[in-house]
Length: 214
Image 1 (spheres, rainbow, N blue to C red):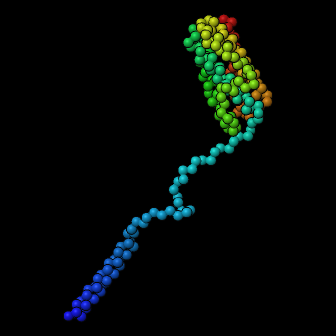
Image 2 (image 1 turned 180 degrees about the horizontal axis):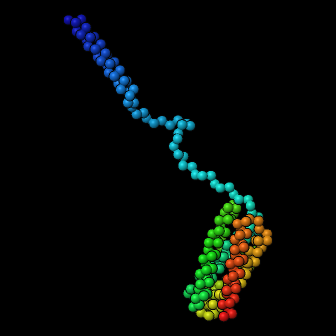
Image 3 (image 1 turned 120 degrees about the vertical axis):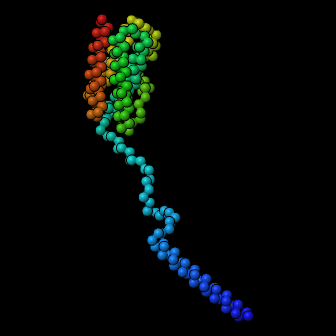
């Protein structure tokens, strides 16, 4: 009886093994046509994903000299003061011609200040500041603090005369600086800016002189 039971168990075990073997073969056949998903693995040198690296920085320019840098550094605060003076006009003057002149000064010199800063950055120089105007004493045509206070306190015809007189001197200083750049600078972009300043501000000086005379 025990032998008979043992034979039965052996037969059943063999059948089970055969069934499992057949099932395994069937799965392998399916996998040949429909592969199962494999876990992603990263291997050195095999990744194609974007690294998000930024473009290399632009090369620093070398086509400039000290005269170019000095002009840009000094003209930045010089323009800043001219804009500060121009901003006083709308609330203190009744003369529309002077108001238009002041608006034109702001419109022209604001973008030029951005160009000064951009060129200095391209030369690898620090960003300019309005405080640079104090370097080496009073710059050509710059108003001192007392003059600025007097202009701020004036109004009407008194203001008009003071504004025009000061701005003429301010423009003359800018022209002197621009002419120095044209004589001593080497950078074509800076020299182009300097030439534009000479032309534009000389025209404004002529306009202001006529307003004073009138």
